[in-house]
Image 1: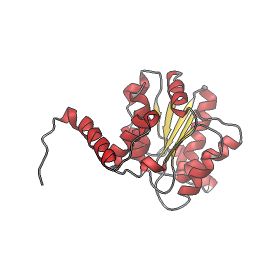
Image 2: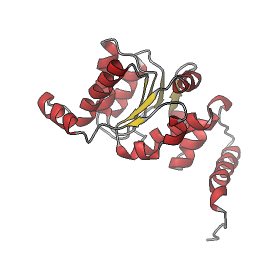
Image 3: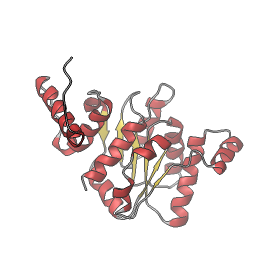
Image 4: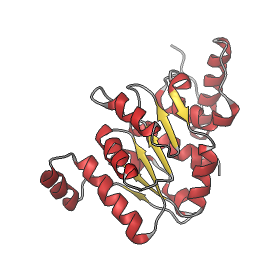
Length: 211
C-alpha cells in the first residue's frame, strides 16, 4: 500500500479532509452545529457510527463554553481521559482537570460503601464543587457506575454544568446513558455501547478549541 508523506502538523487537517470526503461519497454530512465535536470524535475513533449515535441536549455547546468561561473544572473517570484533555486551554479560563479514581480516600469510601471507585469519585467531586463553589463538567468515558452515582447526586439537588456520557462496554452502559439523558441536565451522549476515554477527551477538546 502507498504511504502518504504528511507533515506532522498537517496530519489532523488531512484526516478531517478524508473524513469529509468519505462522508460525501456516502451521501452523508455532519450537522454544522456539531461539526467540530463529531469530526474530532470520528477522527479519534475512525468510527463513523458516532454520526448517528451522538446526542446533544439543547444549546449544550453554548452552555458548556459559557461554563468554562466561568472557570468550570472537568472531572473525568479515568487518568487516560485526564491525560488527553488540553489543560492549558482550560487553565486559561481558570479551570482544572481532575480524576479522583486513584485517591486513597476514594478507594476507602468505595470499600466502605460497597461500590466502585468510579462511583465514590463522583461523591468526592460533588463535595469539592459544593465546598469550593466550583462549576463542574463530568466527562465519563469508562464507568457506567459513575453515571449512575451522578444521577443520584442530580436527583438529590446537584446540578453539573454538563455531563459527557460516553462510557464504553456491555454492563449497564446503555441504561446508564439513557438515565442521565432523562435527568434534565445538559448532556452530550453516545447512545449504545460505544464510547471510551478517548471519546470523552476528544469532546472536551472540541469544546475548548472552538472557544
